[in-house]
Length: 215
Ligand code: B1M
Image (tube, rainbow, N blue to C red; front, side):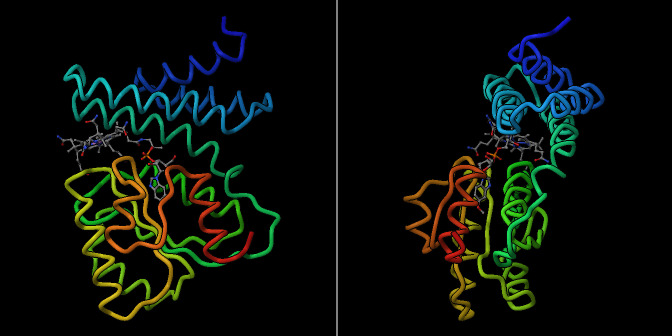
């Protein structure tokens, strides 16, 4: 029987590592009902589990199918948190278009960033994954966002972030561009001409607020 907070967070971590969607969902729901801090559930259980999966993949002890199953369990837990992360009582803060760059299928971090932006009062238009530069440009025209956000999780797809920034600027779009994702750095953001970089979802909210002067 698990009773301390650490034990219960470990159980969520293990559910993701066991690829057990049902347990991840049930345990996160139980933790929410207990009033546990959302950031603890996210950082110490769900994200920590994905980091462990990444480490095991890096060591060659776990493979793509397992990585996919773990991601599904993580997403099941994250969906339980969605209503709490997106609920807001602040005034509309602006519009953000967000997407994962071309040839990149990672969306958990982007989704989390999107949820927390919604929670901060932003209207979020999510273009999904594998978004070609031209689609970001089309969305910039269609939605006229205050901020356009791009996520990349692969060193091989970071160049597509650069291409997208270049195409947006070539096209004359002068809104703010925010970039993020595990391999992305502030230096890279500066180098490609983005207006800002955030290392995590709370950082993305703080940056979006600064970019829109909403906070
Ligand atoms: Co992939 N994968 N993957 N993967 N995967 C990584 C990224 C990797 C680091 C694993 C490893 O080697 N240790 C590695 C990349 C190496 C590199 O490029 N340097 C890797 C690889 C190699 C691959 C494949 C190439 C594997 C293969 O096929 N041989 C393949 C590529 C597929 C493709 O995209 N074309 C692949 C596939 C997959 C799955 C599909 C199986 C699955 C993704 C499922 C999904 O997302 N729906 C997957 C997963 C799950 C991972 C790991 C394990 C976890 C990623 C994750 O969700 N983290 C990952 C290892 C790792 O990151 N530790 C790995 C949790 C998430 C909350 O964090 O996304 O970093 P993160 O987001 C954070 C911040 O980065 C930031 O805020 C978020 C919240 O704090 N952030 C932003 C993110 N976007 C932002 C945008 C912003 C601001 C902040 O502004 C707009």
